Length: 450
Image (cartoon, rainbow, N blue to C red):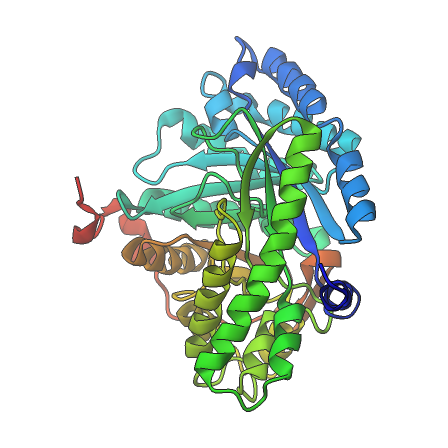
């Protein structure tokens, strides 16, 4: 480390919004299954408290010692539907135990109130899904997810229809808070087992007993690096992004390895996604504008995002042997100031966002829509995004918020990291008949690889 490198790192932190977005501890809860919901809830509460008792203190210490802001401390657990198969109607007891443990530990979010129903929905999972709206309305830190499709199994359209209904129910139960419960609920295709980012994090059954996963960030750093080469061609711009992503990921690798060592757990992965915040200068959209777009959403946006996403992955993979999770670039509307401003002036639409999700991480994220949007329309949005993931063999997701009482053009403010967003218009044509058909959309032919 020479003087120039030290100064560069300090500038990244102080001026360019470099941070570690999250340190997430994954905890297996399979050993907590007992004969009753009450016994299981007690075992879950005790195990989470025991395993994560030093998490927050460790993260604060690392942030102080290395001078790198670490924004969130999080926990992910085994999908709760696995734990409650014998008593699915009482899954809420496990949810309350998890939320209470998260509060006592001081973590920001706990993920894993989840079900994996991508090929079919068992009877106990149907009952579990029905508990999601009440759970999200009655807990503060708990997040939920449902995997409704995969490239190997196709799309479970019965589950897609049900999730659309659950989103509407959740919005209604949190209407006094602008439907914020929906911000803690995501529908997936090809959900991964080592995702440190909420609301979709859960601890996969193929993972070690307890792990540490780290999610890095730094869109401001990449934008700043590009600002020194305004006339560079796109080949050179991609090289700048790769080199900068390498540096960002090395910081994440350092924190991840040290956190795992101090906590006495396995080092899982570094997720090198560019995760924006509502703060000016910390925006993925503004990176695309630095590359030459007058505004994000105009023609050329998808091409720029494809290059950015690929270059980030290439740089990150060279920096760590443990890259995983989602990795790439997120485009949540309410959490990215550039996306917010583009949506306010109509430059970005849901259709354009859908096109962009073909080439970036995850999908339609933190989008506020009119409160009178039907459950069938929400399901159709999910089906479209899941189809992109299924065909392209990538993870896609939908986190959409029908804001009760709001119409297109209104604004909603969720505060903090969740940000603010204009309520975006949707197509008015109905997809209800399509959604009502149900069944399974078969997996694509290229899924057959055995």
